Image (tube, rainbow, N blue to C red; front, side):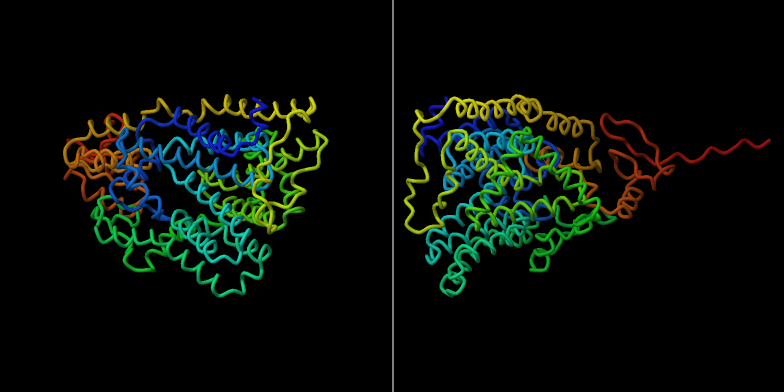
Length: 524
């Protein structure tokens, strides 16, 4: 096993880098629609709908095409998109490490831990936006390294702009990468900034990459049945944000509806969140990746400063922003931070392997793409097995054992292969609801109901409203208006209606009826 990993064969390495994680994610993939955001994403993609902030037009465009695959149901297909994106992220990350002179064993140790990290694995087996985000980020890093090989080539500048545009169209958090990108360009090839032709090529590529934005006004004009960019009024009518205007698109893409959560912590609380991020990283990399990651970050900055600054600023911008983001589900939002740490860990592992083997660190040589004339073959140079001392074998084996330990520990947490609970819950709720019912619930109920209604054509008579999309005053007015006129089901009774309604259990929901009039006392 160690011998195979020492032999740096590019095609074999590529195959293992994508097939091993893909096989793992496919084996543990959710078999159908999953809950919460997954149901929202799957429904919007399949029906040409519109999502809440930050819109994700590239994901929706790609997802609409992906849902046409003739395999499984729509929920399974969108889960599969996450698996492919997660595995492709590992492949591109390995190619980045290969350019940075990291051998296959060190890369397998670092990226193996990334692949089995709880947050990364769990987002690779259900429909989510995060693994496509890391895939585009890894592609952007590779494009930057390739651009640095020939910084005056207009085609490479255009390719870089294209990838940046696509990444921005997928996830607005890509804007957090812009400081690192700008510093890298300025430090690696400052002369390129003085060439108008290169600026024109980059802007042209960026404009092409931003074309998925047209999804938003086009679908808005079509008035899709599934739209989460807006709010319901007191009459139960949905009032969408006007996405035919640039101001509406900017409102959606910038995440302005979540502005209250951005920088929602003070300095002390933010430091606490940063400490939690460090603890989370330590757990994800099983403790053994923390020290090598720090070592790799330092070595990269000292020996390849442009790349060191690039990854350091990527890490800092994402880490600081999401540490200060006041939401409860941000653990998975740190996946770009995980990706950078895995790259650093790979560099650190390689330095340790070289040190144990008594060799000069590979990182002391210039990285391909930053020195003109470097032969690409040198980046994938094999290492003769005869020169490895026993300590090197033990260290190499330890890296693989850590990955296997992570696999064993995370499997029960990330395995969704038998999880059909969201579908069963949704079907049960639809079956229990009376005709023409009004159903109001949160993320664990309504998106799944809407998937069954809009994607599979079940119970179109029911109006299901996500309570996230209706202000409390409008919710109160709507319930008072509809009481006695149609069956009403909620997952919890608004406090403003206490005493105004009679509540009975209706399977998994609460059934609301008008409260009976107070009894009159008998006169004597």
